[in-house]
Length: 127
Image (cartoon, rainbow, N blue to C red; front, side, top):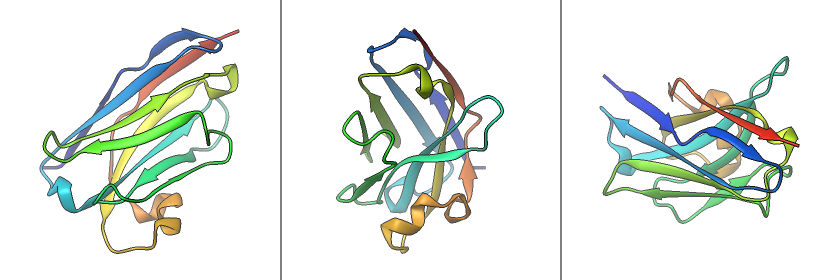
C-alpha cells in the first residue's frame, strides 16, 4: 500500500520560511516523479513544484519561482519543499504527489500525471 505523509506545515509570519517534508512508502521512490500542489480555501488545487525521479530536473509555478525549492533524498524516500519569503497568499493545504517516471517534466504540472497523493499539511502565513 502506497503512503505519502506530509509534515512541516504550520503558522508563520509574512516573510518567514517553512520546510515541508513528504515521506513515501510502498512504492519504488527512486523511480517516481514527485510534486507539490496546494489548495487555498475556496480555490481549486494548483501546481506548485515538481522534481523528476533522478532529481536532475525541477519545475515551479510562476507564483513561487525564486522563493520555493523542491528537492529529494532517494535514500530516505523523502521529498522536500523549502519555502522562503512566504506571503499570505501562500496560505493553503499543501499536498505531495507521486507519479510514474517517463513523462516530460512539463506534464508533471498536471494533476493527472500523479497516481498517489498525500493527505496534506496546512500552511498559514499571517500578515
